[in-house]
Every structure is written in C-alpha cells, then in structure tokens.
Image 1 (tube, one colour):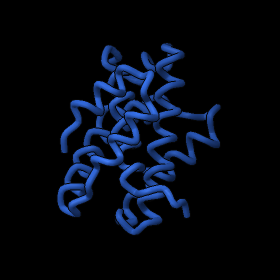
Image 2: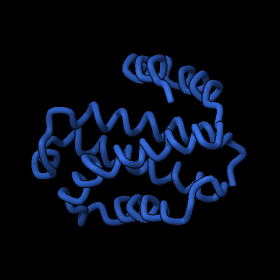
Image 3: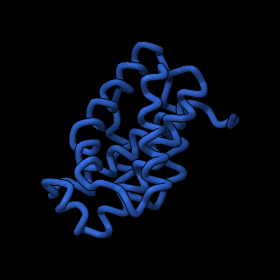
Image 4: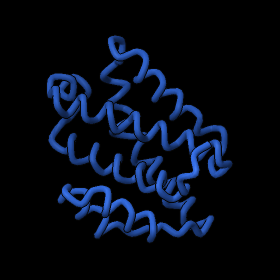
Length: 141
C-alpha cells in the first residue's frame, strides 16, 4: 500500500468529481456525452482516478466493502474501453457521483478527517490549473 496520506485520495476524488461536473454541465445524456470527444475522454479519465482513489480508501479500511463497486466500475472502464456503455457512464455521472460526494463529505465529518494539508498539497500540484485552484479555495466540507 502507498505511503500517501489518505486525505490526499479523498481530495483527489473531490477534484475529479468537480472536473466531471464542469466537463458535463451542458450535456444532457450519455449519447450526447459520447459525441463530445474531449469531455468523454476527460470524464473517463476522472472516473478512473475516482476508482483508484476509492481502492486506496477501501484498502485503508476507511470505506465499507459496498464501495468496491466503484473500483469494479473503474476496472471495467480501464479494461473494456471499446465496450463502455455511455448510458451507464451517464448514470454514474448524473446520479451516483453526487451521492458518493455526499457520502464522502459525511465520512470526512464523522471520522473527523482533516483535509487542510491535503488541500494545500493539491494547490501546489495544481498551481497552473485555475479552475482546480478555484475549486480548492472554495471547497468546504
């Protein structure tokens, strides 16, 4: 397992969810997302990041095994790129990610996970990305 602090994975997930939200704000369904090549590819990449970070949270014991489905979805995307159903991807983006974000916020609050250092670290990592910096500056749990 990685020596990376678990709070960094949590921030990675929040950043990825924010990016997906921005990439898809004018898109209405999976078919429309699929024809927007850059948005599709960017969302798939961010979903992979979410899945990988979730795997680390599972391995740390912070998440319950029910979240394994997120890792399984990441594996399906990562290894089945020619057979990805755009409507399933859209369902995840439109409905599952907001639920997951709310659950993570609740977890952070309940477990009293401090994110300040992780946010500061993410700001350094994303120093040239104004949108991510804006998100991190305004982020509150």
